[in-house]
Image (tube, rainbow, N blue to C red; front, side, top):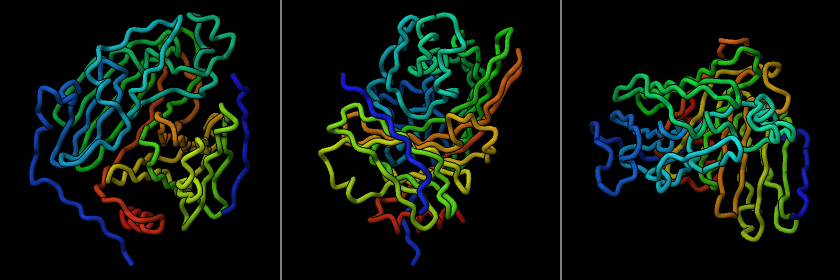
Length: 353
């Protein structure tokens, strides 16, 4: 295997558009078909949106769409019909259910606060994430047509138990995640929100004139093929609309950008939607130094292409029985494809008023 090359990059200084939006006149049941993989999901729905969750597999949110539209999230419906995975801490797997999931941070600490796998602890492995929180079965504590409360098992890997509260109203999903220390000793973590979208999603993050970027990370697993995926800043928004990248189908482009935005918001255009991810500001001093409040990961020109739009909560040391929480919401706005960056930013600004 060729040696990976890691590069860190410093701070970079850097008429109304409309999309026809037609909502259905009333609640429409999700598509009922014996072959429809959505039947395997726990469904929340109202007149505007439908959300699908996998309680038996880490309570992944794998479906988010309007009644007439496609899924905005990156997730393979074939996996929705598979039996829940079995795993062990001796050889923990990562399975690409994708969608919207919660990890804990920092990533470098994932296997350092446990004794079940001494090898991973000694090597300070940073992959995969805690399987008890991401692959195990969650208990459905409360459920209605528009809300659900789910509880994870107590994890011997992170020392945490997660409770996820998910509700919908209008075209928004409201999420609250609470992580409680179930050990008799202290643990130190943050809550890490990760929303996975298709690789070609157009992402926009509001930034100040100075840019707001702390660093970029780039790993070249195949140095002759891999290239850094750069960003641009236009009209107050960091974006990845780089024409030279879009035109180059021969190379694999990837990067991770660590950002302190001017507003606690990430926007993404994908699958005929504008998706808005919002939370409350977390002060920089409360974020673990390995991370940033907002992180964007891009990977294109491979079969497993993806976009990750991520947020981190405050890094906290929890005494036994103490908890931390992270709250956010996801808003879904139907919007047919717009021709360029200027048009997307204009439409975004109109929907942020």
